[in-house]
Amino acid sequence: MSVAHHIGLITEDNLQADMLRHYLMDQLAQDIVLVRQTEELSMLCSVIPQLLLIDLDYLKGLHGSRWREAIMAQSAGARVVLLNAPHDVGHEMLVDWPNLSGLFFRRDPLQQLVSGIRRVLLGEMWLPRQLMSELLCYYRDSQPQGRRQVVGLTLREQEILRYLMTGASNGEIANSLFVSEHTIKSHLYNVFKKIHVKNRLQAVQWAKEHLDARGWR
Image 1 (tube, rainbow, N blue to C red):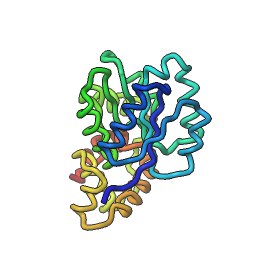
Image 2 (image 1 turned 30 degrees about the vertical axis):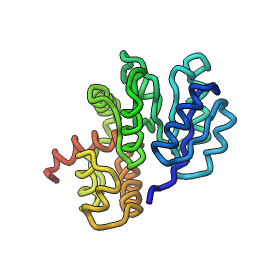
Image 3 (image 1 turned 90 degrees about the vertical axis):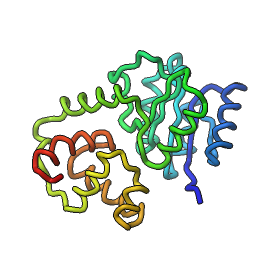
Image 4 (image 1 turned 90 degrees about the horizontal axis):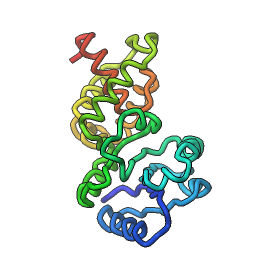
């Protein structure tokens, strides 16, 4: 049985957008709400889990910073997938989205978009390898030195971090450790809090620096 997610598609209200929304709903078997104004984010802010599909072309002419502020204020926990990204996009723009989970370029085929969103819904990330590398370097270099100290992670938390480094989803980690996905989410919440990170990408970078250094592998 598929898990119901609350998905918002932030884009303009036209025939093309409506066709895309219905195509994704059919392929993903999930309901998707069209969000055209920042005020409409309130429809999603009180429900979990949340996923926001954001059309960068739409935000480009509508004060993207205003949208980012609204999302952080009303849907801070929502994961973000960026659509219609330019091919020369750099990590400088992506760090403005702290919960970034996926990115698709303008010319990516629809089936690739569907496959990527499915992986994101499973708790994984869908980012081009080069951008992933740039973001990891950025988070590594921008971390205050005081936050790089090793904190009191349990053996199970260390084990989950090792799985996270392989790109495993929450469901895959749960299956490997014979626990529920809810248990994995609880562990990840505690891990993120202990190591002072906000998302999986930052956690992976932290793990690469500290788990190796301490010989925990």
